Length: 205
Image (cartoon, rainbow, N blue to C red; front, side):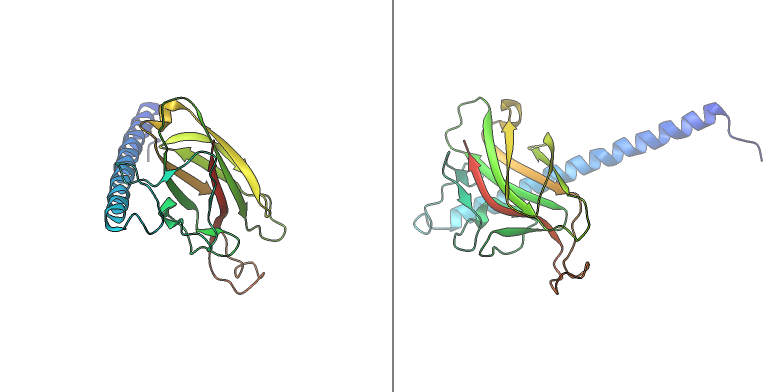
């Protein structure tokens, strides 16, 4: 059988690249659709919940509003589940574990007038014995903010959000964890949950 020519190989590569672009376009559409669904869910939650229950305020798009320099804590002593959009287990006394690789936080900035905004996350993670420090990739509204190495002990990760990604002040923060694993799988405990990041606190300044 004749070997494919360079022209034929280039044509195949071009075809594969076109298919990849099409798949990426579909993923973008699915991501946008999921954002719309989540916004609708939170809007319905906002409309159904009496304001007197927690005093939580909401943006017109259905995002819970976070006040500057007033930390949001994610222990089970506080009901801040409105900020936990997807990929989270139930809160515990220390904070909240993420489920698997992707965790999403949602919040709205109070009275945003433009400019850069600093977001501080207090995070930790489960590290299997002998494993390297895992990392998270963080994006806000699709804008990549950076990769950060985590520890098993709480640490503060500082994110600087530019105006171009903030828009009207509603933030969808996607955090992708490099090595989700369960304690059971590595023989540390009988806990079968697959842990992503551990979230203790959100603070906006």
